[in-house]
Image (cartoon, rainbow, N blue to C red; front, top):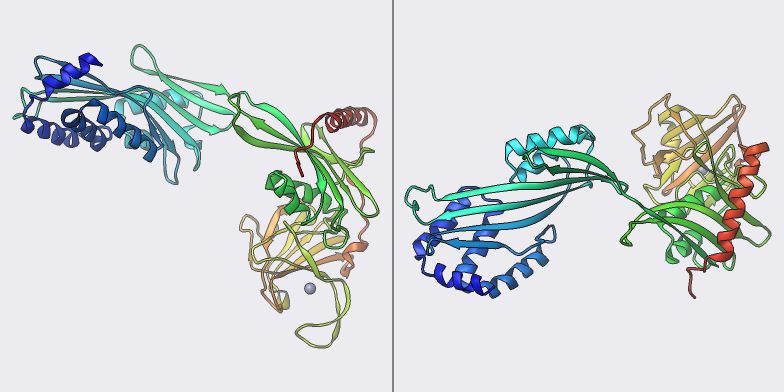
Length: 468
Ligand SMILES: [Zn+2]
């Protein structure tokens, strides 16, 4: 520090023309962050090192994407005639639409030769084209700037180099691609798997505000709650079956990095709803690596058709049967069930099958019909728009979003009109036999019983996260 101050005292003798010329040159030579470096340099020259340090700290706070691991190194020699500046920087770049790896590197001042060497190295372990919006790219580099007061006139007194020490691509929370510079100046890339720690949380409480709201308020992620509601929608009519005072319990996995940062949600391992007249327990168990959910006896909770083919909290606004038609005025059979929900709420395929109608159909407005098998079809009316991923003839899986709630056709407000069609005529959806899908037996059932007892152990030993 003493030496630096001594040297700064010397450099103050450099005439002002030379300094401003240095700054001009810095900008002209497209210095890495030229403005930042020139400001810092001029601050050091005119205001001293302590002031500059404060300035850098402020700067770091205002621009979190760039950070320095070490202070800027300044070497001065030749009685204030020459000096060079060296700094380490880390740039964290969040991938935006239209970014490519080579664009990101070039935009950050990396020379063409290094860009191609880094790209070649990365290509051996990772396809650079697979980076997508939201991924992070971290560039660690050092910049060297040499300056010689001799030659100001000719403009050949500046030398600047950006040396990339490493480039880290983070395509997902579990993997990183690291390209680092070797001693010969070329780059080598490798894939690093990030170790994630699994953590299981238990939430147990009383319903006050609805299952989804109470769950989220308790700290369970929205994704996990949607998952759980999806699983219960085969058996539970959320409008009629759930009362305030009913109880719920959930075990949810989450994954953390070794330094304690939450990286992602895991699976819902267990969920229990205690309603007025029944308890519904659901256990997670993997079958052939696939996550499935079962009742305590090993019967799959996924049924042939969803009862509530809508994502989120939906209220039945009109049931199946005779009613006075809100628009036509006379009594008429209502051949479906209406779910009131906000415009844009996703409409889910009640079962797997093939789309046999995907467009406008009279009073139904925007209409989707899915054929599930030779006997059953389901239909969805009044959608605001379709999911463009699908078309007439597309195969859909149960739970796929096919369209979005709206009020097209003969409709008084945003809702989903849902029909179950059995052998050509509409039937009451609640009368559809809830035939269970997968039923575990033999060795698979034994494996399920051991996952279940492990989950039950968690239930006994993990403290409740809900404190109230
Ligand atoms: Zn209707």
